[in-house]
Image 1 (tube, rainbow, N blue to C red):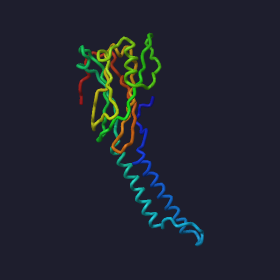
Image 2 (image 1 turned 30 degrees about the vertical axis):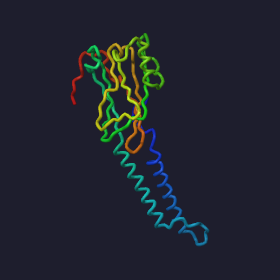
Image 3 (image 1 turned 90 degrees about the vertical axis):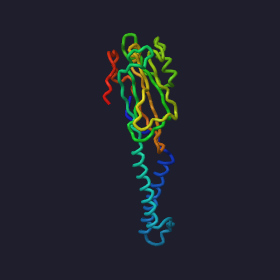
Image 4 (image 1 turned 180 degrees about the vertical axis):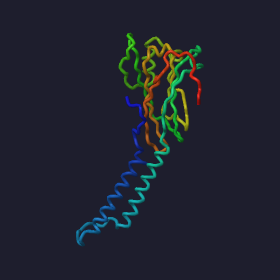
Length: 222
């Protein structure tokens, strides 16, 4: 499963329309240059003279380049971290806490979130990954192993419209040792939109490198 961040949709108005405009202006420039270098009487209609076509191509091309540079500047940088923590489970047990962070300098807004879970079989091997579903379905699958939400594990429900500000670092899930004995992995597919309307996706593994038999909280080094 690819966990790298990727762009899943560009803004139709602020990206595709501008790209089409720049490509059209370039074609008009080529047309004007070719027409002016053909013998008289070719019958080609004059759409733009070379000077006007050049100005249009430079303007739209520059706008497309500026938009691409700005989109790169405001692009979110979604990341993951995990550590052993106390004070999250209601009975004081140590838990593995999964965090999602936005290391960029601009806000990102959640557009969609989905979950998938891989449970452990009775012999300790990992079962196949389940389908992408809503939070409730994943919780029900985990609770089917005799675990209780808010007692043995917890998954935060971030809905569409939830903002991740610059340098935000939030807990998205936690699991007790009892839960980690039954759950091999929980995947979270997070999609966010940036300031220019582009949509980005990253799949996070909540139990990546988890300490499944915690003995003490992970020291805070940052």
